[in-house]
Amino acid sequence: MSGPSTEPLHTVSLGDSGPPVVFCHGLFGQGRNWTQIGKELADDHRVLLVDLPNHGQSPWTESVDLVDDADRLAELIRPLGPVALVGHSMGGKVAMLTALRHPDLVERLAIVDISPVTYDSKDEFAGYIDAMTALDLDAIERRSDADARLRQAVPIPMVRSFLLQNLRRSDEGWRWQLNLPVLRAALDDIGGWHEEWTQDSEPYDGPTWWIAGANSAYVQDEYAPAMEALFPRVRRVTVKEAGHWVHSERPDVFVQVLEQFLSSGRRPR
Image 1 (cartoon, rainbow, N blue to C red):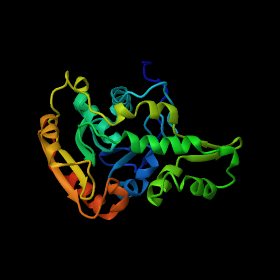
Image 2: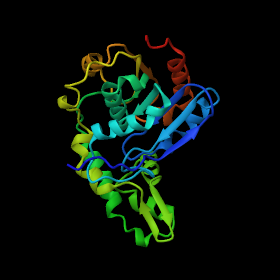
Image 3: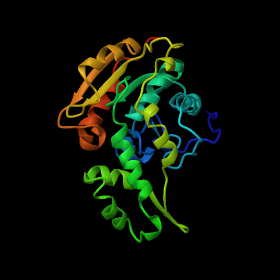
Image 4: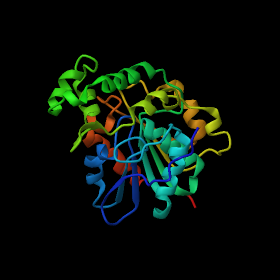
C-alpha cells in the first residue's frame, strides 16, 4: 500500500471568528455538501468544509486508507487548535479515527449516522460506481443526459442527484471528480471497521454526539456497545423522519442539534 499523498486537501472556509468547526463528508460526497449547514453556523464559528482524498477537489491517491485519511485531516486541523469535528458516514469514520489517534486536536465530536462496525453495503455502492464508470462521458451534452442514463441503475432521484454533483465539465469535456477505480477497490475497507485501527488508541474522552436518522439502519441498538467502548461520553440523538442523509433531509432540525452540540459543556482540561 502506498503512503498518503502530501498534497494539501481542498477546503472551503466560512466565518471569520469563533470556535472552529470542521465538517467531513461521506462516500461520493464533497465538502460543499455541508455548505447550507456551514452558513447557518458561520456567524458564531469558523467553519471548515473538507474534501477528503479521492473526492471533490482534493488529490487522488493510489489506494484508500481511512487511517491515513485521519492522519491527513489531523495535520490539516492542527493549526486551528482543538476543533469541533463533524463527520457523516465514511467521513464519520475518518472523524472517529482522528479523535482516537489525535485526541488533543478534537475538542468535541459529532458522528452522523455511522457506527464503528462493519457494514454489508458493498454491493449497493459497487453498483453506483459501476453505473458511473459505464457512463459514456463523450456522449454527454448536458447534465440531464447523464441523469437519464443513470436512471435505471440508480432509480432513487435523491441518490442520483447526489452522485451527479461529482460530474464536472471542463474544456476537455465531462469528467468525474471521484477516483472511481480506487474507491471501488476499497469498498470493503470503507464499509468496515478493523480492530487494528484502534488497538494502540485509548478511548476518546471528549463529548461525543451520535446523530442518527430514525429511518436509517446505520445506527442500531446493537451497535451501542462498540460505540460506547471507544467513546464513553457518547450521547445518542435520533432525528425523526430522516434517513442516512440526515443533514440533507432535515437541515433545520440538524442545525438545531448541532447548535446544542456546540454550546454544550466544554471538555475538561
